[in-house]
Image (cartoon, rainbow, N blue to C red; front, side):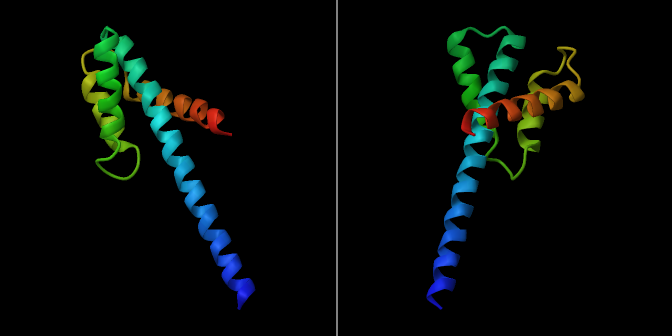
Length: 102
């Protein structure tokens, strides 16, 4: 029984660590996305910081990435950037973010 409890605690620790890592990667990706969109919108440094925070906060609306995608899609409307381009950037920045934590 003791081995089982140790194993259970080990799995719980790993799960918690993995979830924390996913959160950090997503937050970093959202920062990169915010910077990218800010450049497209021509924001100054202060406005860029505010925008990055709004992108990070948008990720708390629902599980998954669609909330962030919809925000960026709406903000870039009229800037000739396709949904496919947005998704490519999301994937690119996700991979870049993973590299900073691994």
